[in-house]
Amino acid sequence: MSTLAIAHEALLPRTGLAAQLPPPPDLPEGDRKPLTKKETAADHPTWCPGCGDFSVLAFYYKLIEKRKIHHEKITTIAGIGCSSRFPYFVQAHGAHYIHGRALPFASGISLSRPDLHVFVFGGDGDAFSIGGNHFTHTARKNIKLTYVVMDNWVYGLTKAQTSPTTPIGHKSKTDIWGAADRPINPMKQAISAGATFVARTAATNPNHILAMMEAAMDHDGFSFIQCLSECIEFFPGSFDASIPRKGGVFNLVPENHDVTDEFAAYKLADEPFPGSFGIFYKKDAPTKNGNEAKIISDHRAKVAGLADWQILQKSFDRMK
Ligand SMILES: Cc1ncc(C[n+]2csc(CCOP(=O)(O)OP(=O)(O)O)c2C)c(N)n1
Ligand code: SF4
Ligand SMILES: [Mg+2]
View 1 (spheres, rainbow, N blue to C red):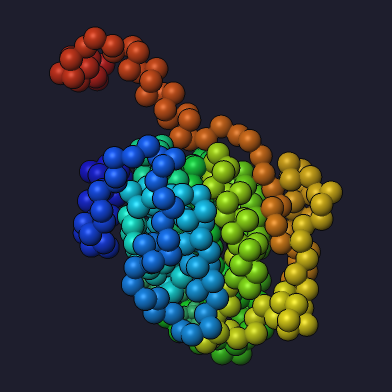
View 2 (view 1 turned 60 degrees about the vertical axis):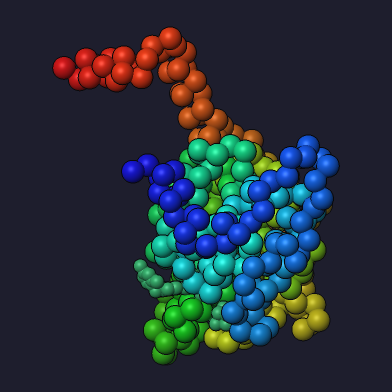
């Protein structure tokens, strides 16, 4: 079964929500009213009070309203984790998929439905531990979708294990004397893997999240956003140094930063915590979506006028 077919089968029954959605009205796109939060929100989020993920969700609703995305076009995919519960809370198409496997699933949707913009949400464990390989390959293939990683420096859902972004010395259930291994740097990892849009934001700065999500959505290619999102339960205070009301600083990427300069982007990514926030890197490059569309149209031109069975026969003949 193709990735697309699996995606199609899985989307509706998993959420059970799509069946309740009203059919798209017979109106020109521009005449349709934007969805309100009430129309976009589904289940009440089950996150702990104070979890950073609430703010990311609130501004995803806002994005849907502001950019007039309608129910039949909203596509929210996630893996497993507290942050990955995201699609349950959005009244639209989406899937809470396998741990670490959200990106290949979302890639199938992106490649087969050019009319949609696919959003993928997840945590640092989902993205960089079990899903690390998919992250690299989705980035290098430049598949058009937006990946928002809600980084809380810990495994939240499974209750406080060390994650790939946990800082050295932090005590967790799996490192009772303190994390011993060097954490990965998601921004450097994204740039080096070939991501063509790399940005950083924080759940404590909602307008900034919205601006980053909008810019990511407008990018033609793989867009990655690292969003610091505090786990109030298992890593409280982790991001205080980036929160002005807690005595920290929220520094924006300098205005003179050249977003097309990969080395300048690395330099920003190398700043000590809390670093800078904004778009570090953005580059126009061919997407897999565009490349595949060309392969398909070139092939269709070659077999124009032939019946399906004749095309199949030609393939068999080649194999002889
Ligand atoms: C194949 C598989 N391995 C392990 C798990 C257990 N598991 C569920 S979520 C998770 C990590 C969650 O951490 P993160 O992705 O950072 O999300 P958070 O809960 O912090 O938002 C793990 C190890 C699983 N569900 N499936
Ligand atoms: S355990 Fe942490 S990440 Fe999970 S909902 Fe609670 S505060 Fe959020
Ligand atoms: Mg996490």
